[in-house]
Length: 164
Ligand code: HEC
Image (cartoon, rainbow, N blue to C red; front, side, top):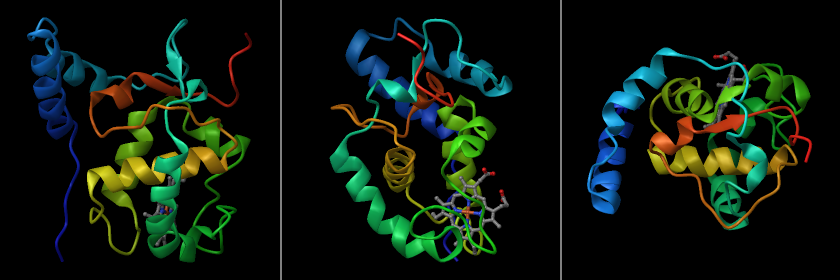
């Protein structure tokens, strides 16, 4: 089986290239990423970005629906309500469980799912599926897209939209 373990290091490489390409390497992403990986924030730090700020697009959620239906729905159900085997992937208890960095959910899916064929998803497929899961949780879409890089560590899952 062709497995592909997603590592924070691999994401950092992508991030460094992106950052070097855009702002001349002023920020050492690899160091920040390694430090971030040690810490699992339970709540979003004040002023940080959350999933409720339009972090995925409708087009991305639509792209994610196809692999979800093919590779996840037989355990988690088409409506994400969870089956006899898979747990629910929507609802407040699900969001509360994953409160913290969206990167945690990315690695959970990328490295352990589908449970009968773990680590077989492409990084971009994981972010598309994440977009679909967020959409199915009633999270509003926007114009941005989720990308498999350290930006996932700067977006926080919270159970609802922060009060304005
Ligand atoms: C063969 C059945 C099966 C398939 C297929 C499957 N899962 Fe799972 N999934 C499980 C089981 C069982 C658990 C609970 C155990 C665990 O967390 O590893 C789970 C847990 C999860 C969790 C954590 C839920 C929570 O709140 O703890 C996520 C997220 C998830 N799956 C996403 C997916 C995605 C996305 C796919 C498709 C790419 C997928 N799963 C495919 C069986 C499956």
